[in-house]
Image (cartoon, rainbow, N blue to C red; front, side):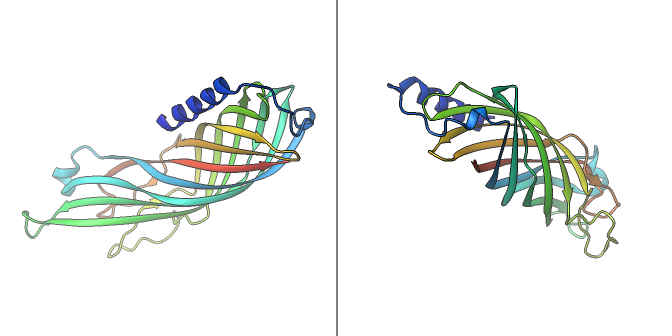
Length: 237
């Protein structure tokens, strides 16, 4: 949440120190019912992961962490004005590429003074369908700020939930479908014939996406939830 706080403080400071009114660009933007655009962005994805009670005693797990990895996304935006220019409904179907690394440290059963390290990479190619409410400030010259809240449905095209497990070389199984909540904020800049935005969003899954199939790397795990930060540039006309 600290990124959102920094963003909104920057918006406040910008408005506070603006001194004089400037000619308004793209005056017709707030009068139109629909707007369309596209999004380019980067992401850093991770998991919220919990281990079973007694994972050390039962499975020899000493530690388990998740390392965030960078990714990218692109999408097409449709915006609907909800009666007032300050409230809009946004649909942003997008394609995203994500990667996370689950780092596990096990006790070596042949020598308890040594550790066995396992780094499991989980790749995802997602079709994301977020539906978000956008709450905007009043326009100040050619600038506005906004916050976002809503939900997202995700289909992981790279999911291996129905794949046959290889017990000599196991992998982490995740469900194909997911439901996430999203919050965020951004800044809009009006050019003469289009508008572009810079925004940041945080998403977290509502459901446990982990599939337990009783391998040596999945046995200590209880639940896994998808989460991540998304950084976007949006062009809208």
